Image (cartoon, rainbow, N blue to C red):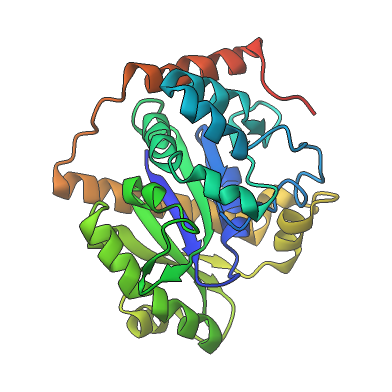
Length: 293
C-alpha cells in the first residue's frame, strides 16, 4: 500500500485532506501528523482528549536509545481515530520549538512508515504541513524531508484560486529537485486539488505543470468538523468530502501501483528491530494496550 505525503505552500487544507483520506480508507490506516509548525488535530477533531504525553515529540528521545525503543514508542503513541482502532493517528507537535529535536528522527520514522505500508498492508498518510524553503531548497529543519524521500507520492495541496496557485508555484521546482535527487523520482510529485475557486483541474495542472492526481470538494460542514471537532454532521459517512475521499484514495493507490510497476521496485526488507513495530501494533489491536480516551 502507498505512503502518501501531503504538503502545501500555505494553509490550503492539508490536515483536513489527510484526515478525510485516512478516515475514508477501507483498510487499516495510519495518519502521522508531522508538520514541524505543530499539529492541530489534537486540539481540533480530538477536542483535547489527547494530552501532551502522547505524540511525535516523544519519538525523538526513543530514537536516541535505538531502533527497538523507537518501534515501541511509535506503537505506544498511536491514538485511535475510530472505535475498532483500524485507523490510527500519531499526534503532532504541541510546540513548534520541538521540531529541532526531530532532525535525526525523521529518517528512522520514514522507515517505520515503509514497514507499515510494505509489510502490514496499511494506507499511510503523512501530514507534512507547510513547507519552508532555504535558498531555494527545502529547509533542513523546518521540513521533514526524509519522509518525502521515502513516500510513494508527494501531494502538493492547492486550491483553484490565483493566490493558492501563485504560492504553490514557488514550491514546485524545489520539490522536483528534492524528489529527483533524494526521493523516488520526479513522477512522485502530484497535486491534490481542493475544488474551491474558479480554476478546474486541467487549468491547475497546466498552470503548475504538475498532474492533478486527486481532487476533493470544498465541503464546509465536513471541513469544520474535521478542523474543530464537535458533534459529527448528519449523514457523515455520505458527506461529499468522505465520498470523494474514498474515490481519491483509490486513485492514489492506482497511481502508486503504476509507478511501482514501472520502476520494478521491490521494497527493501526492514531491519529486525523496526519490523517489530508490526507485532506491537497487532498486540494493541488484540487488546494488549494503547491509548484510551
